[in-house]
Image (cartoon, rainbow, N blue to C red; front, side):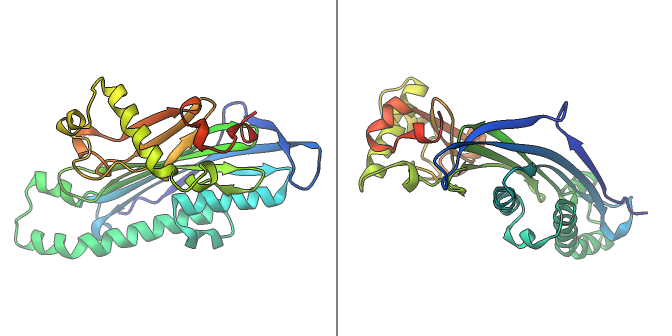
Length: 284
């Protein structure tokens, strides 16, 4: 017997509506823009060969999207960015959010069966599958997205992904979109920092801040702790902005081993203002 998927649409508590003053690029006045966000949940369990006695894959999605805006083009643009970041650009062609989630779930289940069924069948025939080894065939994936920060012309959208495809442990990854609502596109480092040498200066600031965070005085001490053993410390395009500063986010293995978890390095605006464009244009 196969357990079928269920989709539950969840509105934020008290149907939260976020209202901001939005400075239009085309008009020299301030327009009030109403943005309403909803969350939708999908859970699906798919057993190998459709038998509930066999291992299964489990997919959980908690997806936040823009359901309504007083500017139609803004809704379409933001939702396409959200879908691409969470599921892939191929799903932006779907007609509805439900179709996006259903399509992604279908592909996930198909990939699971293709990856695991033949190996599981062979091992099962050879009677080599111990109870603990059966867990290796039980895949899980979780995608959670939310609006992390929203003020004036800046919206920060966060995506958390957990994935386990067998083996010793799964993987947790976090990504951010920092969207300029006036220009309607995600910001990269080149949109925030100025000059030809800002990356070198920024790298030094990141090392210095990391030393201060860990209460050491040299990079060698950081390396002895494990930092830099799986990659170099460079300014990452995976960052988020807020009122106080910019935080660079390094997922596991990008800069440190799995056991140390993700690394966040926060630089206050007053520390980087000489190499940045005026952030006040985004956050009033």
